[in-house]
Image (tube, rainbow, N blue to C red; front, side, top):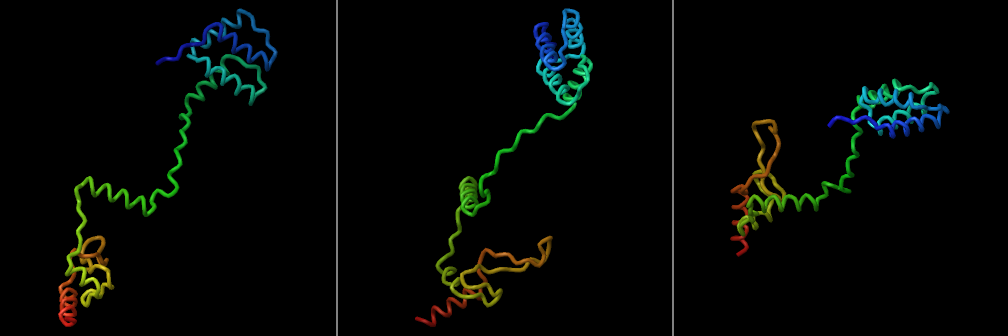
Length: 174
């Protein structure tokens, strides 16, 4: 969309703004000259009004159409102002919010929670003699390759020695 130049009536309004600052007495010839300058330089009324106000805010020079054109071109070369981003929620990573997101994602993907068997549940009451996992914690193993080498990760099943320890203790109590 190409900007349309101000009408003659709008040029008179622009000259009236300038007249308030520098007491010019615009006549028909000046209106025609400004109208021609606005047509050649493709001013819009709003841009020209802003340029005139900015000129008188920063300069005492007598305002000519060339000043308006220069200020409009300068303003057009500036990037548009960025809209302010909305404020994020108070705590976007709160534990409750994370649980809700993970639960919803799991439901969408059709994942079901793996519940420990009664045998595993009983074994979790003991510390693991193999990996030394604490009571109530899952067994772990140390990664031997990759960028996480040396880190400990939980394993899916419990170590057999832990399960056997729990079974032996259960049988010994009976």
